[in-house]
Amino acid sequence: MSVEIISVSSHKELKAFVQFYYDLYRSCPSAVPFLFSDEMKTLDKTKNPAFEFCDAKYFLAYKDGRLCGRIAGIVNHRANDYWQSKAVRFGWFDFVDDPEVSSALLQAVAKWGASQGLTLLVGPMGFEDMDREGLLVEGFDEISSMYVNYNYPYYQEHLERLGFVKDNDYVEYKVKVPEVTPQKFARTAEMVEKRYGLQTRKFNRHDMVEGRRAYELFDVLNITYKDLYGFSHLSSSQIKRLVEEYITLADLNLVSCVVDTRHNDKLVGFGVSFPSFSRALRRTRDGRLWPMGWWHMLKVLKWHKTSIIDLLLIGVLPEYRVKGANALIFNDLIGWYQKYNFKYAQTGPQMETNKGVLSQWQYLDAECNRRHRVYIKHLE
Image (tube, rainbow, N blue to C red):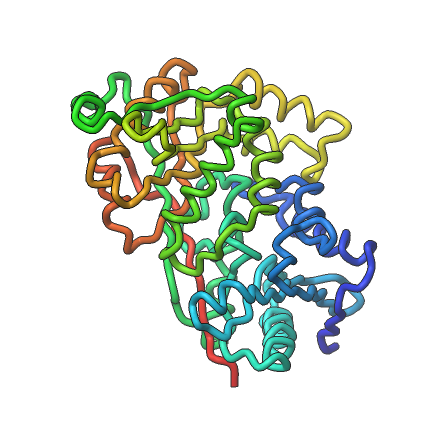
């Protein structure tokens, strides 16, 4: 029986779209269920501010009357304009091990993109850079996180059989938290403070939200990330959402901000980390916080009941990188990781070509434990 592709057009179908991931990966020990409510909000055109500059269409695949795959087609007009590209993105791409299913899903997005004059199919990607990007191609036995995609190994085979080729790779590192902060960071941090007047600051919740320091942080991100692969400038409404959903919940001891004391405490760099929710999420019922999922999440959020810290974001303004501002961030965060008794830090995705960033890990006991790949194909 041939594959039937339907376009998601109702709330019920959107819930089925989200639920498919949990059903497909329920027995996989490395996969981590994403928060169901977050997935619904991200995909909802009335709740995600990315729809100010994005269009999207979602598809479900049925075979023999059974739901067997899903895919989102996304057009980020802002990114296309910035990069002078004609790309349609695909994301939320999951399917059973059936080439007919994966091919039909990708064809649905390709047809939708071509109807708008687009010539490239790229993914997996989200609406913007705070969404999960890339297909997992290395590190299948590592427990995943809520911030990155997890997929079965057969996904790569399906894509490459259909003519998709590598466009960009992201690598992630598992870093052992040292018992003693490396002298490289400690000495550089001391020198940077004296020579350039840079200091790390811990802002309280009022400073971050009412005092707008968190908004400055994302302004710095917009500048530091602007030339990275596929980046799409964060709008004020997107930043507001990120502040409300992350910064207001964060343990601010685990957020390091660097200020220039010689220029009115201008924010010039940051490091944002969260205790890992991976094991707590695996104890939820398909990413739902009820009936008891909230308790497992709260134990991590409030009492750091995990041995892993997720180092999500690091950004330093270009003119301050050469001054060693990164060393201030690492020197500060390592101290707090030690105090909270974290054993390992898991980095977020970093471009494999970003040698400056990757070189930081040489001073620590670090191993590359995951790799994600963005694929591309020209539409015929």
